[in-house]
Image 1 (cartoon, chains in turn yellow, green):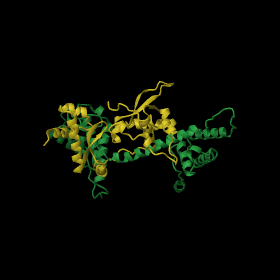
Image 2: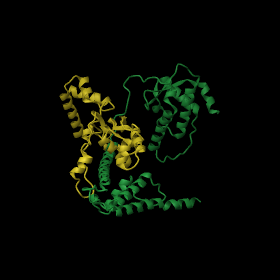
Image 3: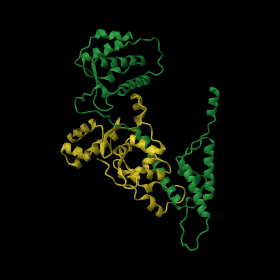
Image 4: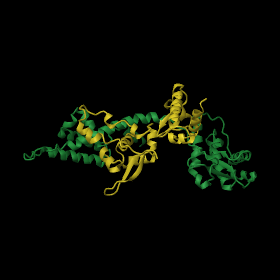
Length: 196
Length: 256
């Protein structure tokens, strides 16, 4: 048995949130390439030998988690309804925050064409977005960003893993002109230090 | 009276639910197979307003955002009717800003759809639950455990009981006495303390859970046990206190 792999499994088994590569490297005193290699190996082994859980890289770290196939049985055993699915309004708002962060509530409402403060509150409660300072304009409104929870919830390792906004197909017929892309698309994926 | 009320709700009409004025506009554009870069404003304004009227008739609350958009459409329409000033070379299309907003909104709408698909899948992925690794849980007094945490613990047991015992046929009614539950818990704690509250209350039916719940509260009040919680929303631990209780006095709680 590979001792490094065993040690990694032990740490991950006991951890309840994603463990960063840095933390693992430091704890084990091994080179990060070796640790990464073993992590990939564990992940591969769990995926070939399909069992009740898998190793996933999410929110800037690694963690064991169940597979979506077992949702029903888990819910039944734990007598849990689970968190309610996010509403379309919440998802729209989250999409805007994700691609335009940091962004204020009025700016979000402007894009959606509807007042979005209530939806934003729900997202704050579910810790998918957070307040990240104030914007230096009249009224100094709060600026919002997505959280690490957001990344974990959607199984993203990094905010840069979001598909580029331009990849989201264009609507009704006509291809989007370059002008429009320039105007609404590209500045988007704000690279942000999500892990803290 | 009741029948009338039922009748009323039976005739409820549902409109496609729009997420706001931009969503409604996109719907109209799609429905009419219009080129978004050349929106016939007069037509769209009319249709938009007739939707609002329908919503009004159905007593749906029309948010201010919809009214604002109606005003904006009329404003654009009036601008387009104005004769062009020959001296100004290039006049910006009055619709341009709206078109850009629609395109932008449309894009985020499709991102939201993708997020929705991801949400469905990811909801099924469960991580390992939070546990404390700091050895002994910190002692917290009953006021910090909070009545709601306690109720939650019982509710969890109750829900699980219901799930595991569907359509139970009650053959005989067992009377559960608060005093019995107090004695049972106390005896258990004498063997081993602390224990997890959840283990003690698991697998009991509703009546028994109620008696147990009251029993736990009584024991806390008497100062014979303490409840601890290692962390917020964590498992509740029950422990004996330094203050021994006379088990004979448990019986008096049934006389109330």
